[in-house]
Image 1 (cartoon, rainbow, N blue to C red):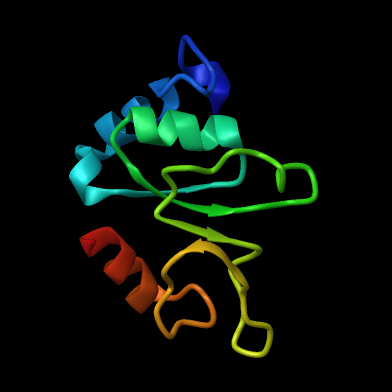
Image 2 (cartoon, rainbow, N blue to C red; image 1 turned 180 degrees about the vertical axis):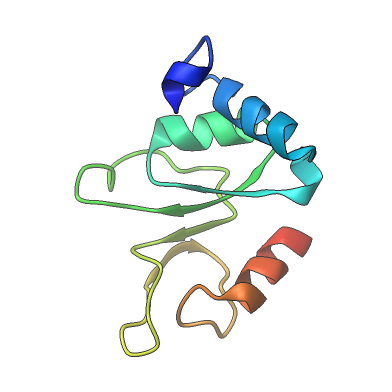
Length: 103
């Protein structure tokens, strides 16, 4: 949806647009990203951000992400935490998201 805003990531414009459309502030949101530019945009908009890496982005700087994972995981294929604290979680679920959002 980068064409919906004046500047693309790493500018926070797309996040400001989305929050405006939903009538929410950053304190009510959690971003999901997979690149350094995405994380920069989300953080500039004041959003806590969960990041999953890919083969293309594994060398990016994800400083500031609330949690960095190799993937979202499944009950039979748990994620690997690359940075941050997932507690006892083995895959991303509502309980983990609530905990990340609250911290």
